[in-house]
Image (tube, rainbow, N blue to C red):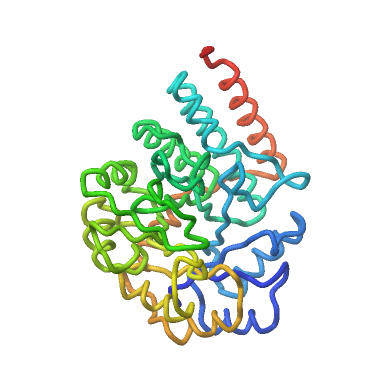
Length: 343
């Protein structure tokens, strides 16, 4: 198995993609808007990915947080609120907010499960700080550690009940970044005491099945490498201080925060301690390069992958039962949010 998660070029597999995937057996795949036309088409695509790899328990990822980060949307799919909605609810009534969040993410997960998605790159556990870039903003469960932990936990549980594995991100914390890592490398220069606060949500949810790294340089930990490429940060902070033992994936290797070729960066990320390299753009040349550069998945990687995929509880029932369950969850979510005490 190749320790890579690959994107796809379009809504159907090309012959070149199919041949490559059959040859190298990537750990998983990720889909974006360019791969999505309809429920029928997307369901057929995810089925084909399982057939190509010969794995029913295949990680097929999507970024479906809600709010501005959503690859599926109206009119074909539902619209989902950003995490900030639940953070605001938590300030008014923590118990109702947690239940509403659980309902929301289970309902969202059922929509993903229907079309063969198995992993959602959510929830965001970053702790936003004043003056930071707004790339996180309303994607976070507020600016209170207690709220982030409580809401993040029930989000993971809701996804798992729908048969979806959640991915906590962006470990060890994106909330202080002064730049968007899609376009530049952020550098966080705060001291260890401040960084300890950023770690708190990740430490509390260190039993999450999967996590995604941050392309950020934290000078107090490693003045040279960003977290994704830092053996020190991955070993001492993510695996050590945080205590995360789940499947660790890099953020997308094609982001402008990183310099160098995608294949070389993928190898560097794996050697630094990431279990799997994430390559989102579906460029055949880059995927072939990664197939040449990356070592085979380690036994630890395979163990973590199996544990992560086994953490979900697949929804059993006919499509109409799934729809009924989703409708009931959405109705409960709305009832809970309406019942919140006035500010």
